[in-house]
Image 1 (tube, helix red, strand yellow):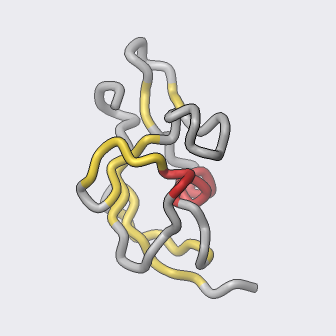
Image 2 (cartoon, helix red, strand yellow; image 1 turned 90 degrees about the horizontal axis):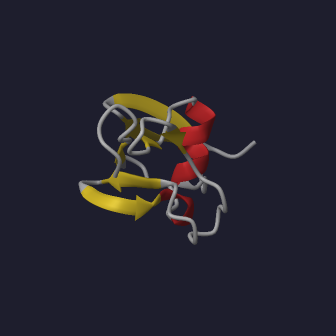
Length: 86
């Protein structure tokens, strides 16, 4: 079993498998990624950075394609599921 690391997701500490993509960690947590302009939940479609549906704020940088970023210990991830569309 891979060793785990801790990241912060929406202010909550989350244990994730080492070498997981941020998108995989968020999906495993059950959190929503963001909302469309009409309020529909959005999330990853392609898993390879083309669709841009997995965009999140990671370590303060907005619009990051979470399917392309590997989790690092202490990383801070913020979804935009409650606010306006990212």
